Picture 1 (tube, helix red, strand yellow):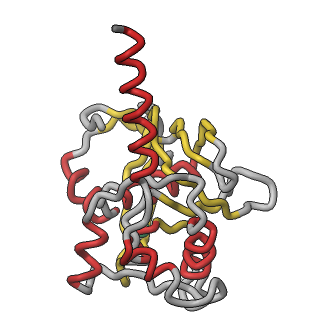
Picture 2 (cartoon, rainbow, N blue to C red):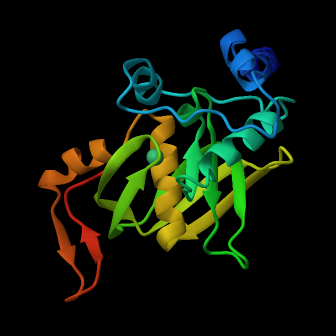
Length: 215
Ligand SMILES: [Zn+2]
């Protein structure tokens, strides 16, 4: 009996893995131009774009051959000289799949890296308040409370599963981008956090301890 149930679990898991592929519309968009051409960045001011930005994205098979193509076109969109950013999430180029780029300010030479199916598996009670903006929200910046330290899991560009502890501003970028995958914008966090209560840990420091917000 035990063996039979394990068989079904394995079958279900592998079927789920195979179903994690791009839709026809997503494939067409990814292949709509050369790898050297940026994808258009979705904007909250456009109703069709907003629908994509507000949708919950899904995992993708980390070995999917189209991921490197999408990643290149996402990178170019993020680094558009007209408005360069430090991170981007796939819904921001019209793809509701769990892929993000983050600039690693915590690594030597501050490289840009992309992550597939990133998840936050642990958050600190220590909270950091800092200004954020977004490539999809024109002309708006505002303060958002974020966990100072997070632990994440993801698949890297080689398709290998990894876990990492991230701190400070780089952790802020991860939280901003992973929020995008849940259809949450930093402006949503600002509204949600209006009643946020925290205990400041010192004068003139942007760090505090979480009191009311649990997520
Ligand atoms: Zn954003």
